[in-house]
Image (cartoon, rainbow, N blue to C red; front, side, top):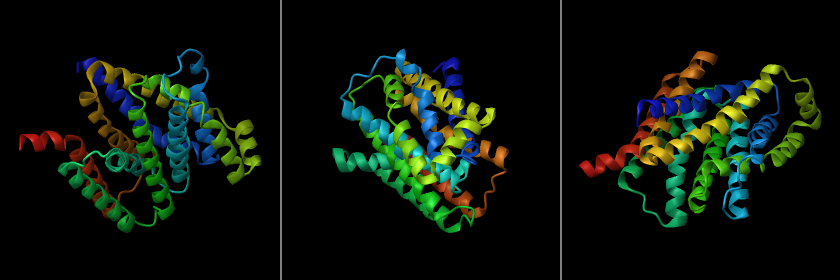
Amino acid sequence: MNARALLLALLITGIWGVNFIVIKWSVADAPPLLVAALRFLVAALPAVFFVPRPRLPARLLWGYGLAVGVVQFGLLYLAIQLGMSAGLGSLLMQMQAFFTALLAARLLGERVQPWQVLGITLAFSGMGVIGALSGGDLTALSLLLTLLAALGWAVSNLLVRASGGANMFSLVVWSALIPPLPLALLAGLTNGWDAVARTLTHSSAGFWAAVLFMGLGNTVLGFGVWAALIQRHGAARVAPLSLLVPVFGLLASALAYHEAFPPGKVLGAALVFSGLVLHVFGGQWWRRA
């Protein structure tokens, strides 16, 4: 990768990391599922009028839209409102890599490699440490919802694999049409329609700027540039840089919210991140050994 491509990749991972503190700020006084619905509505419109529909069956498009929009981000937004910190959330969402490997082994018959087993063991040990020792600032419900959100991300990864090389940018834009309605309905049922109406009519300019950042900057620009980088330079060179997302997320959360890291949380986060590094680079190390 040349310097320009590397800088673009760093920009996108930075945007994705900072996005977690934007989520935390936006759901502080608004129904989290409604915020997620608005994010995808902004990502879909007006882009769908200029981006061709992806060439894949409707069931895959709907499946991807529901997995990413309702399960992954709907539950993540809810978890963050219920107490999951922005920094820790950015790290724990990377558990999707391990869930993807386990689902691929179970559903597609793929073999889990030895370094993946060790990486999964380290990461889940870190999860146990975080749950047991991180202190009272993290609730069990927010932790569970974040893990379910990461599982939704893993399901969407398998759906992408089943799509047979469909244009990823088209898939992101068109699938964004699917989550807004079910998310908005769930927001009304869980938070009440008065809260939904108040958010839509009385929110500040800063709130709508956050929605635009999440919908356009994080989703449309982020996934568009990332897909272009992978197409030009290959997934093997670009994908490992996504490890920087939780780094940026943890730094941004520490700066914006003065997020505390007691010893238990530090140890657990280090184990999870070590497992991620082993999962991504373990194959190269194993072959050299």
